[in-house]
Length: 525
Image (tube, rainbow, N blue to C red; front, side):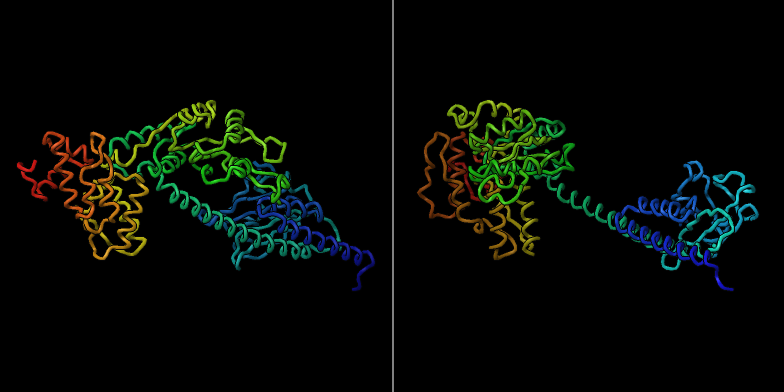
């Protein structure tokens, strides 16, 4: 039987609407990776373009084996909550059980139609058709796409609607698959990020900082208390004492631990570039400024900005730094727009800032702004109890790095304990690394200690301020020098071993061992 003109026109119009709808759905799927936004929009398009009302996406929970309405167009939250089905229950459950579409021409005459959501009122009085198609992923039914159609005589059959909905269900299946892949990758990246953060933070946990002395215990206790506040911290101490290590530990124990820790070495940046480095610059602000650049204050927003060698910052920059600390805002170089920042400031210096203030090299107002909580880190020579655990720590690091298993003898360790370490922990670390790299045997002996370490420990002054009396004996062995220094220390201390040990920076046990080792007799002292 030939189609009438009207039927032909209706079919063409349907095809146009169908293509337009599928195009709009496909376009929405590539415009956002948020599955909920995409799928909700798909149901809205089906309603608006094709008159498919109450579009519902019901998904199978793999754990409970029940079907829940994930998304619905035109249903209230209460109606959605009522839409729970077992596999095989009702039309929705049958579609999941069979994996095949189901068409109900008139829901009022279908006993299997449960109308569990109660969104349709008295279905016996409504002329509604119901179409339900499976949503599949890799051939497995994971859910159901369902719509209502007003039941009326028309030239386009419900089978045409099934064909369109099957294509849409296929697109939904792909969208869900991609969303799951994105979610898995996102979770993987989150776990990886947390793992890297833990790895990054681990060396800077107070509990992981290597020490044994009471002095460092006090420093770390006070630093932990400071970390719980918002106060500005000024770390003071000689070069190589670990000021940046303490600064990072304060940051990673604070509420800002998940925000950036940005460091800047004021002594390493030329005076004419430091403002651009700290505050950033606008494009064209000066020759070579080919693009806008964020400064360290912006990079540290929400976190901590660490100024190392703060005493070396130029006076002209000190004024601007003071303003940022007071007002918590600044302008980029060449810019006029104020940028608000929230940063915690930690500074460090080995300089005598008080003397610099008196000389006019450091602003007094900035000094008081920075010196809210001062923390002074003692040099290694004043906490020699920390040397053995530090040596063990560095041995482990550089043995692993160099694929070796080098150990250190007590004699070599005692030689390290006799040295004053002007370069502090950094110098000790370099020394241990050098000994491991150059070691010929599996155990580092006293003679393997670098010559500058073995001899430099005597370069200094005696208690009376005069040069050491045995400097002229540098050509002698380390043992001879060490023996003579112990004898002289014992003489100065009235032969009290404990007092002599304190002057030498070693323990009473160690000096007793040395006296026995070198055969120092009473008549010698």
